Length: 168
Image (cartoon, rainbow, N blue to C red; front, side, top):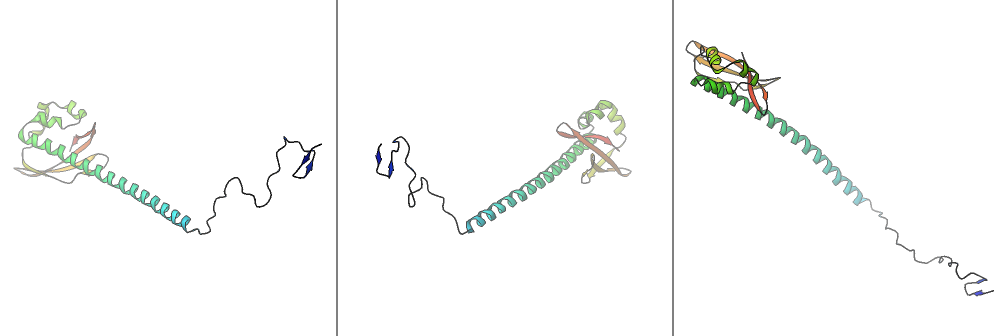
């Protein structure tokens, strides 16, 4: 039998000692408790404002993208019709044919286009603002010797450009 100074008789020395009693230091420090929730509320408010700003910025960015693409389509439509009418006015029917979509250009050679369009001799023209619907529509006011004639150009996307696919 052995005597243990901790107060036991016959204890095995290989058995660990019991944990320390009251007042002993814990193996790790407990996290401090924040009795003031002010920091939490400030963080939540700042996070909420950041979220609202991101959402508003996203909506604004999409709006700018839509308006920009609409304006670009209008500019391309105006350019295509202007190029066609300038070429027709100058008698450059091959250049006018290049402004047509492939479906329409396959139907008309430069000579056929000249035969169809040459009867309408105009001295000047003005274009209305393009209208974007199913197809982009541009109304042209052609000034001829017999008065004003209106032509409606229908444009559609072909590849990366707008091409004339119909003339009424």
